[in-house]
Length: 229
Image 1: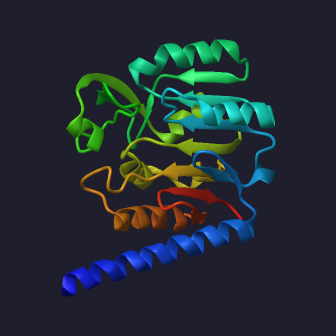
Image 2: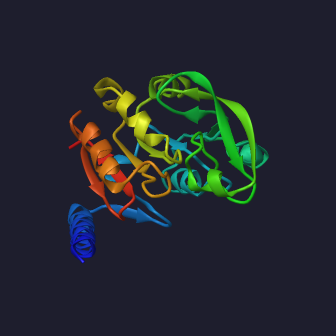
């Protein structure tokens, strides 16, 4: 009974936290784009965009290039998405496709591609990887610094990161100098989807970036916007 009450209180505390963040978002004037993107509209003009973890639908990149007419780099190592992303790149002069993975180190690493879900992962403890039929192959993983070099060291107006659990190690590797080159970025955190990570791990990862000087807003319980004031 005591554990049950503790669990209820914990959930109520988290719900209150998320509600507070949503109110804070509206107060700060965030611009929302379905299905789950939020950013400061006034920071999007000039610079380039980076969309990491595109999947089979480059919706974020498409929105950015259509509304803001800025150059965008798509980053995704998944083999089954490559033809579609290359075709999208051919049809859009502002778009560049990089068939790479983002992580904490520049290295080759095994990638696990789900045969039934859009998202694969570098991590074996991802729920899709544990439950789905898979194919596995090596992909090139690059650091944030290397990615910024591949984007010609241009100013980054916005960056979206959806790397299916690898974000927890990635966050530990970023430096203040690298972050200062990005006006704002969105990270989707995968607590619960990755067996070994909880909401507490997500809050700790957020604090790592906040300690570098960026502000943060969790606006839906999983996606977090980081920005410079």
